Length: 288
Image (cartoon, rainbow, N blue to C red; front, side):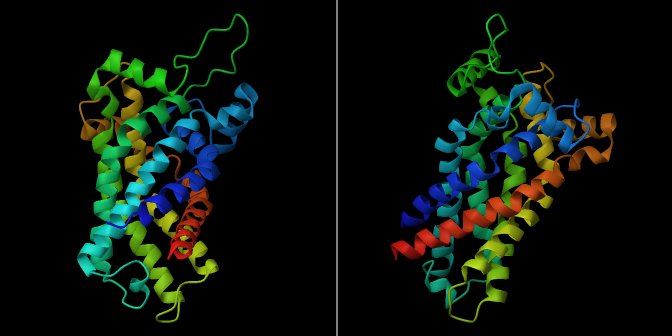
């Protein structure tokens, strides 16, 4: 099994994570808290109350973990296409796979990514939702002192299953979404590139950016449900499942709740995924 795709996926995932993390923090807070009137209000309150560092809470852990999950996504996707089409990444430019194969490979990568991602994403969301300012003498400490303390606390208070809270919603979000993600990218690259040639850097940037936007438009409703289920254990308000969370959220806040964070998701998705795909393609080309 070629390992270049896994390594390139990890590096590109780390670059995209650093670029988009402040937006992700705002998105998570908008989805799980009702104290903000919108994106700008959330950003201003976070900055005033927690300083610039408030936008980067819990980031060190995802760089070492969630970026690795990104390598699983790209590695599984590429190797699934290899199994389906018997063509390497470079050969696919001359012999493009069918969109059916691309969708199957993307869904496979998304499904397995969700399995690895669930505990890491839970810890990230819990840390991002800590709104306490930086510790000062006499001020109460935050609930979680860091990623390891967060994981240990969840395990002790909610049991082993607590680390996988929201995992079903995450799986339902990522499995079809990643199929759409890769189809959008490959389609735009194919349409904008002469047959048999590699796409230009500009094409990769644009295709990657629009793939990110398309996937997040599709993923946002279940992303809201996922984040709410992950925070439910902290609030001692456990949902009975994905459907129960969907119904209770709609009854209490209306259908608009499922698109909370969509604007900032889309704004973040273009640059993050443009950089992710450009670095991924560049690294694979460099190593071949």
